[in-house]
Each structure stands twice: as C-alpha cells, then as structure tokens.
Length: 64
Image (cartoon, rainbow, N blue to C red; front, side, top):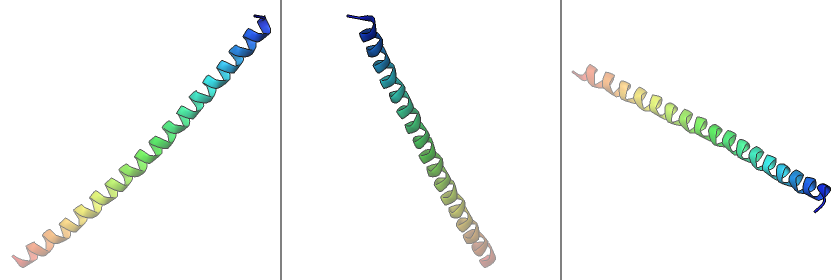
C-alpha cells in the first residue's frame, strides 16, 4: 500500500469522524433548546396554576 493511499484513507476517516462530531454537537444544541423550552412551559404552567389557586384562596377567605 502506498503512502498516498494510507494518507487518503486517514483523511477520509478524519473527515467522517469530524462530521459525526459536528452532527452530535448540533443534536446536543437542539436537545438543550428543547429542554429549555419544555422547562419554560412547565414554569409558565406552574405560575399560572399557582396564580389561579391564589385567586381561589382569596375568594374563599372573603367568604369567611
């Protein structure tokens, strides 16, 4: 096997590995973004729920 053939194979492997690393990195960013959005939705839902409960408690206190 010639040196140029070995070099070409190594270059192909390196390029493939670089592509896999970049793809994984992008998927982590997407996953992190989805987690942030999910957490934001949960937090918003919790705030809305707590606000509703607070209003209900105020109404019940006024009845007493």
